[in-house]
Amino acid sequence: MSVVHADDAVVHELDGSRFVSYASPSRGSAELCAWRLELRAGSVGVSHTITREEIFCVLDGVLRVTLDGEISQARPGDVVVVAAGTTLSVDNPGDATATVWVTTSVGIEAEFGDGSRIVPPWTR
Image 1 (cartoon, helix red, strand yellow):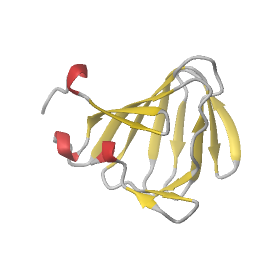
Image 2 (cartoon, one colour):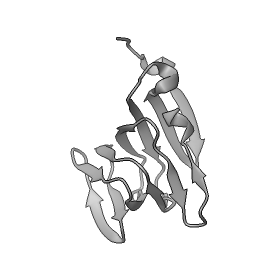
Image 3 (cartoon, helix red, strand yellow):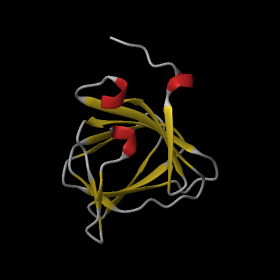
């Protein structure tokens, strides 16, 4: 068992969003990955399909979440469960940063519309 202090979290930036990684294989977690996602005001997410389930818990702000073409809003305290194989995008239509806690399993990949794939660095 280990404690990851906030000052020790690893920060990654991508498409104007911050991914603050706390749990991943490189940090000692064998099965799960967890990070704080910070979406800047007015940001529009990149549509992608995930290979593993993801769970989003909204901490601050309001998200516009598109899951397989269906648009929903999520507010603080709401949880979004995204099944493996779902195409999603997450937007912050608000005027302040939105903060989300995200959890998934090790090995997740994202595939984009052009067929390219990534293993997000905050999950390694």
